[in-house]
Amino acid sequence: MKYYSTNKNTPEVSLKEAVVKGLAADNGLFMPERIEAFDPSFFENIQNLSFQEIAYEVALKFFGEDIEAQKLHEIVFDTLSFDCPLVKVDGNIYSLELFHGPTLAFKDVGARFMARLLNYFLGKKEKQVNVLVATSGDTGSAVANGFLGVEGIHVHVLYPKGKVSRIQEAQFTTLGQNITALEIDGTFDDCQHLVKTAFLDKELNEKLVLTSANSINVARFLPQAFYYFNAYARLKEAGILENRELVVAVPSGNFGNLTAGLIAAEMGLPIQQFIAANNENDVVFEYLKTGKYQPRPSVETIANAMDVGAPSNFARILDLYQHSHKLINEKIKGFRYSDGEIREVIDRVYSETGYLCDPHGACGFQALKEFLSGQQVGVFLETAHPAKFTETVEAVIGSGKVELPEKLAAFMRGTREVKSLPAEYEQFRVYLLGMCF
Ligand SMILES: *Cc1c(COP(=O)(O)O)cnc(C)c1O
Image 1: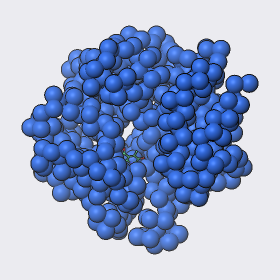
Image 2: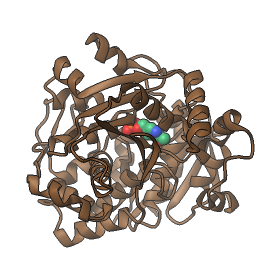
Image 3: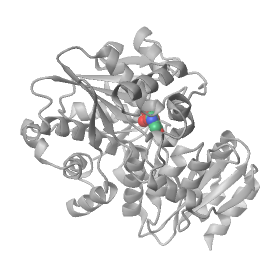
Image 4: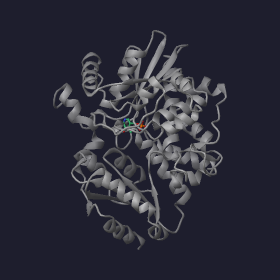
């Protein structure tokens, strides 16, 4: 399968090139040349398949031409060593919990899948592949854990000193093996700048194989389609669907997760309506309303993984629907919530149902609450475990009520190992050159 750029100013590339390069040469995002629909019979029996089995069938549609079936099966089953269960929350509203992976957030799946694909394509190279990732918290932990122990690849996580929560930091500074945490004396923007400068450094790139694990990478983005198929299967298995329409609400920042859902629908998955749930970073909400797309700097909110002012995957949505505002408006409904509203939702849902939402999932829940009509079933993607946001959540429901899951507690007990660097390129460069030996 070939991959084209959403900017359409550069030749199509192979899957390998799309995964290794991340971004197209004309700065566009890669899209698969074909989106193959399933035969309707697949959906008649889907409830008999496990999450992992469904994911394998979906992965075959994307990657089956480029990776042998046996290998792809191994990659999918290794990536999905955990489930994403459906939990009833309130009436016809269900939570699809995507937070049962190693760092308790949905990015684990994409990160692990990408690690395995890079290893498949480059792992036998004589030279080690160096993945550079700048993080303000969550991306670094998902990538570090996804790539942990994957042969032939070393991950360098750059994070701003003192600006990442203790629990986030513990998730990428205690791993050891092929993961190095670099504490940069600067801001997140400084970290990003160091990484970008390294990618543009010709001499350095002759000596080292450098790549990114950016969320726009097709290997991180496409596997997110797995979730949507599983939501449908589990609803059907439980006999909940019975001729009712399915509405899925997606807490959105860069819109990778939602775009993967749109692709699942193009493959025939019967989802009637998508909802993009946003915090105050609402450029897509405004686009849906006005037809005008006006990116702007992000603002900080309590649902901080959605603090995105220029969502990169929006280019993919425009491409998927030929830039038609009308079509996009039919497929996606927009809702947005202030921090105050998010707190109110967490509080109300917890006291009325006992279900504890994280600040991102809360936006999805509330959007369904406002949107759903009688004959519909709603699923919101619960993108992170509430314990990842203990401070925010306990400030709402009372302190001491959020239990720290064992997975997070184990990170906190680990030994912290970091290398400190100033926010100066020359020293980062010297550090990277040290990797040649
Ligand atoms: C990354 C993230 C999101 C947003 O996902 P996108 O694919 O960027 O839209 C939502 N919630 C959590 C917890 C996240 O980590």
